[in-house]
Length: 366
Ligand SMILES: *Cc1c(COP(=O)(O)O)cnc(C)c1O
Image 1 (cartoon, helix red, strand yellow):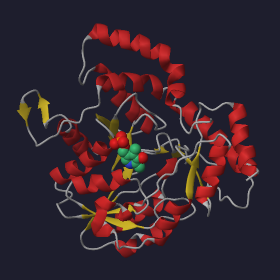
Image 2 (cartoon, rainbow, N blue to C red):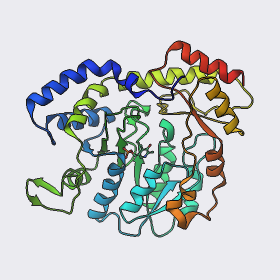
Image 3 (cartoon, helix red, strand yellow):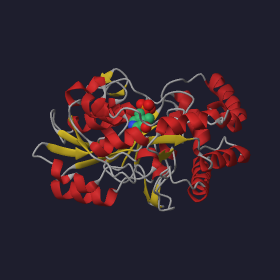
Image 4 (cartoon, rainbow, N blue to C red):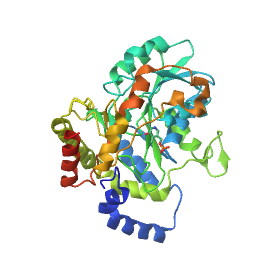
């Protein structure tokens, strides 16, 4: 069976380095907010070409804390509306809700799965104060158009970059520096994945970074002195140590993913399958390779019978979730079509050449 994602295998090349680091960690005896976190924050800010990076507990908290910090700074207020893509992973929406803000859903483009800038302005009201584009599946959202709309209406832009580490328009225009602030997740399955939960925020906004730095740690910069109402969401020292090792390989991981995606795009030819659209530039890091088909159950069963595990990202759109009952009667036809048709096929650096060939041949024979 070709598994969709074998994390043990993906982390195998790092095992010796992890073990060495673990030994140092035990000898050092410093477990919370130490040098590994500081190192990661410095290196990840450099990597993203931002002034600041704040390590936090996970990707959801990264987004929640950005919103809460902007509320603290008075740039957002309780009840303000935040525009989000209707087909995003639920975390983007939960982040808005957790900061007492109101998510407003906007349809994506069917071709790119990313928020359609042409649909945004119709949803802007006097209460709209921010846009949260999501670089879904690893492909950058249309940030130029989004930032123009934001400027015109004086809105904040916050990137959900949880799936897009290293995705770039150019060397200096990368996921994480295309907006006021960005949230990253290092959940184990992400392109840069820890061995547990971890997240970070990048920004060029000095005032925001200062608030975030203490907000993630009980609102405290000096121990037992609480300046603001904070939370406990620190990047774990040991996870930071693992991430410091893996960050060095992120570009080559992304390059491998892009080259594999290029193979899929040029070699998979089947009228029953719609391939993802991509301009072959570096604006995509293929966190997921997502195809569409009108008879998904049939294709998924066929692939399974041929030893290929697939996943659906995501089977139920946020507005149809039980947790979002107040939205259940809303209609988003493009979003619903996407959720009915998408299927993610294996794409990662743990796959062998023979496995990649088997995936291509099997899809062509469908
Ligand atoms: C993974 C993910 C998150 C949340 O990250 P966690 O680390 O799991 O909290 C947020 N948004 C998107 C789009 C994600 O894929």
